Length: 294
Image (cartoon, rainbow, N blue to C red; front, side, top):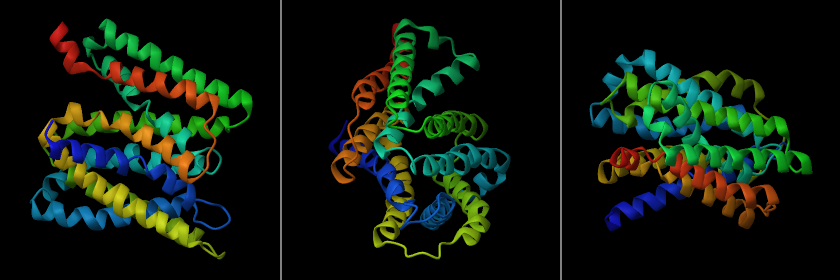
């Protein structure tokens, strides 16, 4: 990988690792916004940044013509997951949320097997699936038994991860060759419009802390607009398969930033589960290497 590729890869990992920190600050029930407001503002900002790009590269119309695929993608990738994660982070740490989202490659591998991908049953990928699920079970079990995390909130993040894992597979099969910038720009417009009535109804009357406002801006500008733009600049350089490995980097950033900046506890569940989930996800998603071995 070139120096530019490494730089973009690390930067994407950071930008997609800090949303959990931003969300935790933004949805503070005393000084912040509701999860619906955060999603609405985040996607409105992101759409405002990506739409001009899509128009400039003349890729917006193909995405609009494929609305029957973009709409379900928006539901599975943004409308559902982002409200679930935002609501969950009112009760669980940002690091735990990031760790649970790291299970996306595991769920994606399961969905791929259901759709007929026989390489899933290669011993390396099967090892990854089993190890990843063991890690998840340990995280959920330890955190729930110790009472350090709300089981319902954990379930919300896992449900969001399921949505993430199927959304990309769905839109890629339905709109092959259509710009990811355009697809996500349209999906963000749909999401912001969907949550606008909720945002207006729930607009807070209490004082909003500056940290919450900056967190929403950070979510919209850095973790949504800039991050998506950088990721789709990265994929032509290193390929989609290698770029997807940024998921593991995201999780590491999420856990470390939560501990260092928000003083979140580094619990036994995270210490044990994090390496198992990351290693399991890595092996479960290694389709390219499996193809060479087969």
